[in-house]
Structure formats: structure tokens, C-alpha cells
View 1 (cartoon, rainbow, N blue to C red):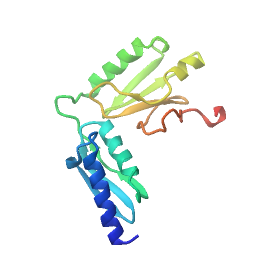
View 2: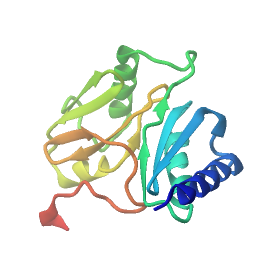
View 3: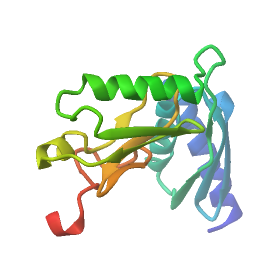
Amino acid sequence: MSKTHDIELRKGVTEELEWDPSVDARTIGVAIENGIVALTGHVSNYAAKTSAEQIVKRVHGVAAVANDIEVKLPTSAERDDVDIAASAVNALEWNVAVPKNKIKAVVTKGWVTLDGEVDWHYQKTRRRGCRPLPFGSSRSFEQREGGYQRRSCRGREGKDRSRPKTER
């Protein structure tokens, strides 16, 4: 791809980001080389980060996207790991499908990891899939074999990628 093509592509990507109201294009940097778009900057929530990626993907000529946008929560919304852990414990207690005291939450730098064993398959599948964390965290988790694992919510709509290959 030529330098001229990259310049035109950068213009198209920038215009698309500015046109879409789900992101603030002023806080997102765009660099392009050989059709590969690198996004930098910061946004106030994870939804804006994934929206920016989706917006760029729909521009004709984009070969790949490197999404290096950082999520910076407003200081009024930031929560420490203890507060997030307390919210995770409350969410588990309120979920009637999860047996009491069988799942433990560990929070490290805003990441929640759930670990434990359940007696029935429906209890395992009930918590499967991408779930948003309590307000004030920019990350999410999903269940995998042997416990919950960290994961971003970028899976295809309606697809549950957490099942082992033998169950597909």
C-alpha cells in the first residue's frame, strides 16, 4: 500500500470516529501504516474503547486494528480492589444459581478472577459468558474450565467461546 492510500485511509478513519457519537474522537489518536490502524489515547469507559475499534473496522481499506486505547475512569468513579471485591462477593451471594461459599473472588489491579467448584452443570453454565464488573472497573471476566478467567468482552454476539472444544 502506498503512502497516499494510508493518508486517505487515515482521513476516512478520523472522519468516521468524529461522526459517531459513541466516542469522543478528540481523545483518540490514529496512526496508519500499510492499512494497519493503530489507535492510541484514552477514553472514559470500556464501551467507548470497543466502540472505537468497531468504528475503525467498518472503514473500507482497514486491514487490521491495534487498539492501544487506555480506559481512564473519572476519579469520582474509581474504586479500589477492596471495594470491587466486596461488590463481586455481593453479586455472587445474590445469584441463586451459585452455591454459597463455593466460589471465591480475587481482585488484582481491577481484574476479578473467580475460582471454585460447583455441583451441577447448570450452575457452571449459568455464570458462563462475559459479564461486566461492578461499576468503577474497566475490566470483565468469564467462566472457563476450572474457574473464571479474565477476558475482554470482544466475543462475537451470541457466541459462547468459553466452552471446551469437546462440548462444541
